[in-house]
Length: 396
Image 1 (cartoon, rainbow, N blue to C red):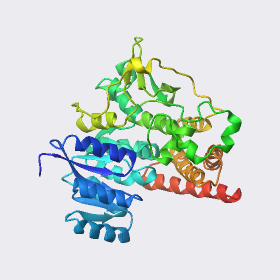
Image 2 (tube, rainbow, N blue to C red; image 1 turned 90 degrees about the vertical axis):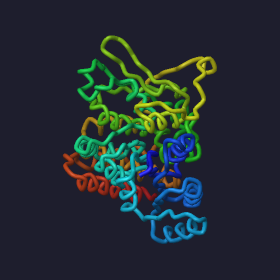
Image 3 (spheres, rainbow, N blue to C red; image 1 turned 180 degrees about the horizontal axis):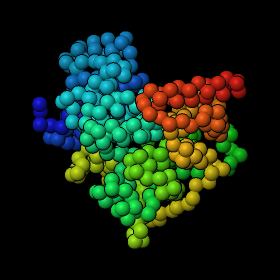
């Protein structure tokens, strides 16, 4: 096997995937693309394959696979095209793979991310839903396989950098009082509440600081993204929900902070560019150039903070309630949110109704203990069905 680190990039055509490939391209002496996957931007996937020459590519259907295989062969590539979830799991767990960028958005990323974990890979976790849905099972698999789990969300990566190396002994044991999870507040941080009824998907996706996919952008606008990150942080850092405080920081320069019992507060700062956490995780425990410009604090001049308003951001409260409930509640929350966000992007519901859909699903389904992946997937399916029923009942 080549001495280069072999990297599978799941979700290669999304913003995280493209940023990952940018970092990889800056270090050809260290990294080689082993596999790329894409879902809907298939011409972009083809172009990425022609540029990076991966051993494998993964697409959603057999028909698309035949088309892409022909195009790549015509381009002189020997890339083998695989199909669907089985293909994703294969390239995630392949014996020659050193690291997996898990950047498939939503529940679809759960099984391939778990496959990478179970194979003991270095897993760069950008798919927060995997932990939200199946946190206990996921972390159990990490411990059993010896996989290295490195967070890519800028907030979790910041927390990871600010914690001592032995934080696994327990936050209280290493002197941590609380984790401060920062949020930009999104595009509607100051929008009058009565105007939220009329906001459009385009407005919701116009994030003031970050370049992200449409689903994640809507989650940021509703602050569900921060709610999911709160749940994820509980699992990553063995924290209780009460130990995590969310604060709005509009500049998105401080990515998160850790408050210690001696009064010290450590923060990780940087320009809002995902290549920073990606390069940190790719090279960990070393450091490499990410291509990100140095932070200019003189240009920024000020750093602001405020508490989130739950009347404006009810999704954050719903997520905290799900974190407190545990069991199947986070999986229900995530699934209902995915259905509601898709409906909003399709202009079937108004922006505030995203929270209405989620709240109804959580109210209708009792929280139960989750002891298997099948149990997680059953909760996910049940929540999706109830969310769709809400849409039908309300004529959407």
